View 1 (cartoon, helix red, strand yellow):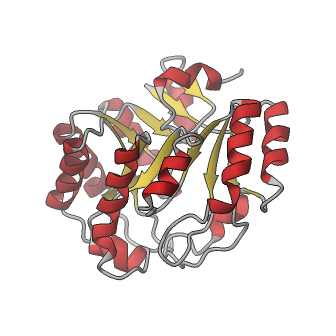
View 2: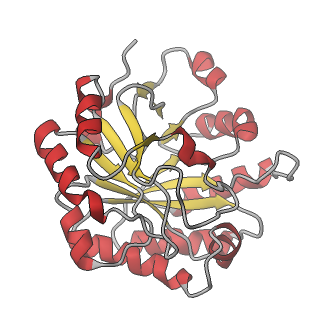
View 3: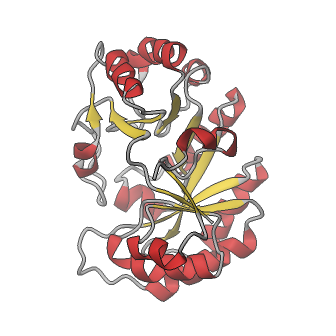
Length: 280
């Protein structure tokens, strides 16, 4: 089992600071606060400084525009220079970018796209607060990224209010049908701890995903912290996933030395894993 805890070698950069045009129910911009903030003209030096201090991977993220896309265009030149000068491994939250020309340019810089994929009107309407027509855009953006040759790891919700087995499986079957062999499972984070979280249902959905998806499954960092102690233990004991991001802290102690630990995001591919070996 592989575990991933980004601390020193992998950082997250917001190219929009605390700004976001959306108001997603699970975030409301608070996750942007913990990222390193940059402005156009400062990204290159920020990345160079990070590299000098041992950072080997960076997630390019930030707030989204009203069309749920990351406004990355002002940073294309700095990203390309940073890639050439430092060799930093880049992942990105691009959102629903469908522009083929832009995605083609990003292919020369972004090594992997962490892409939230859904066909759920609940996610689109009630979490992302977008109109119904964006359900189709989630497919269009994924297909465009694949078309230009970007490596993509889709992130699929294993649980949210009103989820059904059929909806989860249809999403996993779709990404598998277009050649995806890795998927990250997310669990919706309610806006309050008082919101009922059916742990048994969550685990059953993960079990179902494991039976129906032929590739690798990762348990992503988006899951309520207050369910980790229950869910992480069962997921690891039953080997329901291949990787776990930010595992429940006591779990590693209980496992002794029977695991691999990496200082990175859980979607980092095997071929660059040596860059992110955990330093004791």
